[in-house]
Image (cartoon, rainbow, N blue to C red; front, side):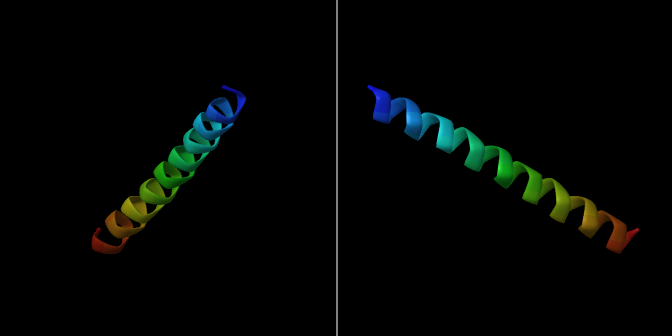
Length: 34
């Protein structure tokens, strides 16, 4: 069970980092086109 919790928390962190990267790339693309 503990390993599952660790996996879930790490997945959440990865998701947050991916979302940040996607948001940054989207905003950069918008700034580039605008």
